[in-house]
Length: 275
Ligand SMILES: Cc1cc2nc3c(=O)[nH]c(=O)nc-3n(C[C@H](O)[C@H](O)[C@H](O)COP(=O)(O)O)c2cc1C
Image (spheres, rainbow, N blue to C red):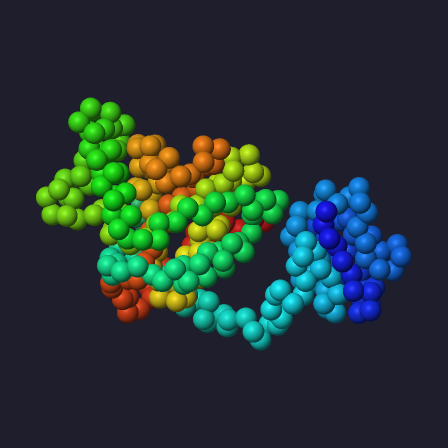
């Protein structure tokens, strides 16, 4: 049941909702938008119909115009501000030893949850370590699991760097695996969703930029991803990630203990122009 409700007092019958509907299920036969019952299952719940209506006359699934904010070009961040955000975001490998407030993390996740997903499946799970003590315990578990692999000579070929990671931790307490991030975010998706891996990566990229906008540092953590998904798979259970989920990636985050003073210039990326 979609609960597609039109305020007939305000609807001007412009048909914008119908023409923007990606599933093409909104009909204008009566001059007022309507979705036939047998077409409801084709709705991908993107809420474009609510978002596009100039009169605020549409609501779907209980979401009406009052749930969102009014959009206008002048309300968007300026191009230079976005450029500064994109160029100023860096991988953070040095964190303050403190937790971020739960309300701040919730806001980061709420915004990241607006990232696009294939077929608008939204079958993502954001597994969060919101307390540094828990992450430090997890680090012990991960390192112990890796050490066991090394002892049993089961470390796959090409992954000898994990020997150095254990060595660095034991000899000097240097944490190359998690970079002493106080928090961890693992985004996973239902394996059967339309595009599990891509959805997770886009969600994390969205999370990362929004975090950067408020001085919160992040690190795409390939080493932790490898550890959790392949080397010490018991960690996936420990994290409570369901078996029918595919882990997209692991990201550490927290308040940085360093501050970069300038952006760098990478010039244009490699471009192939098709003629
Ligand atoms: C998919 C991915 C995996 C990464 N894995 C790690 C990692 O395991 N450890 C690490 O220190 N940095 C990791 N990085 C960070 C990259 O080294 C970093 O993005 C790159 O050097 C560019 O630096 P910048 O992010 O500060 O611009 C990873 C980045 C990406 C995108």
